[in-house]
Image 1 (tube, one colour):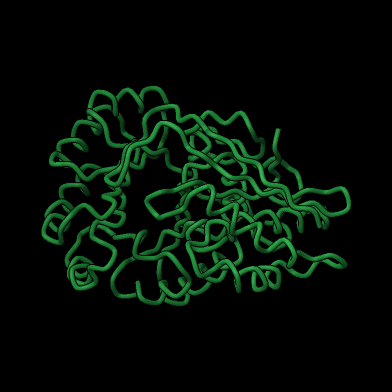
Image 2 (cartoon, helix red, strand yellow):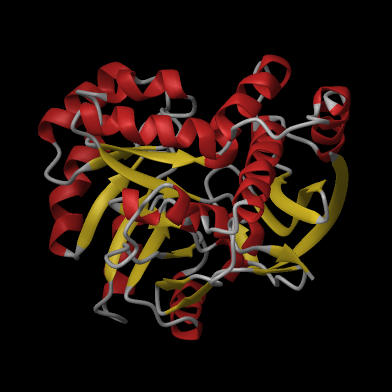
Length: 337
């Protein structure tokens, strides 16, 4: 098996601001695994907030080159188990890129999209939202006008959060989701919830600090809107912790280590009665095409990364007014240009 690493700086269409950071460019790493003339592609983005740098990811992946299969292709779950022994101790972004590339290669060697390999029905997939980052109200409205969508995810965490949602509601009848990115207190969340519900908000994502479990217990009991975990649900072991504290979880492939653990997290969440969402990390079409394979298993999806960047490096899924269309190709259907 041959491994190649490709690095790119993806320009963002607008400055992207959340409570943790602002950025205009998204550095991304594409892993390419090749076997008998076929190549699989996976992606991981540089994310300083989580201590994930390009140099660190490349070093991690280069450390496992000697462990790559030579004679036969093991099942992807077995491949992930082998790679995770070395790569799971740190933030598993690099592990995700490897895992997705391998699943893509696996699908291509079997000449089927991954959703067919998993025997999933794609006829009733959820639509994706489109994210509006923190900005002035005027610029947030302009972003919505530039990209009309039936479903928006609104980033919050300011001193005027309710006023922002009220202003945006005057401009569209789209469904809203709000993401406070850990910026609120329990009291704010409980107060905001009924007001946001009146404004057509579907749910609140990660209002409190990730380790504020006592506060989340109270919010879970008293909020009039469902609460979805993000920063509180990173790895497989976090899913069970969220039961009784959140109504659902947002799984990020890069944070958990790829498709393989995400499939297990989805299954575990279902047994616990949790809603399931998969989110993105502002990646290219390669990363979003991997998420698309999981759509039939999800209640909600936030896979607009390839719409937020100027993606001139990859092809795969397309998104039209929230509806995701597949490339009708094996694996994830994604490839580098």
